[in-house]
Amino acid sequence: MIDREQLRAMFGGRCAYCGRPLGAVFHADHMESRYRGGASDGILFPACPRCNLRKGVFSIEEFRAEISDQVERLRRNSRQFALAEDFGLIQATGQEVSFWFERHPAPEKGEKE
Image (cartoon, rainbow, N blue to C red; front, side, top):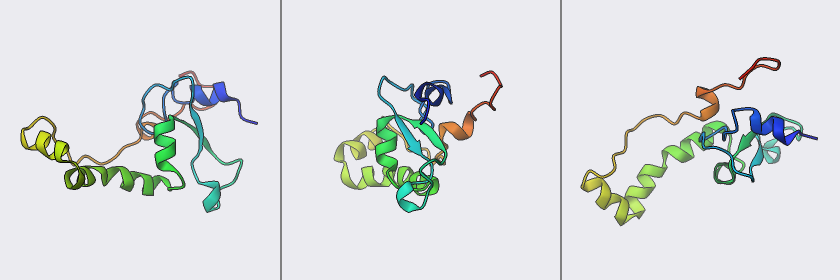
């Protein structure tokens, strides 16, 4: 059984993927999907519902690619996005997707945050 408060504290109360503060409801995400061979007692990360539901059964690299594809999807499917982009209100940076846990590693056990 997982200790949800320890899980919440793992990245300072933030989602392991987007870095937004976790609300009262958050998910314990299996880094490697159990449906794709990951262990049921595998590595768990705290995730906001939005990220965890979007990640689904994707691997980390598949999730990264899924997020990267969002700009092209928006350009293709959203007139509002294209209009805002044409008027310089938003700008796609082409920046690589970097997850919160990659930029802010969890402290080692016994180490203070």
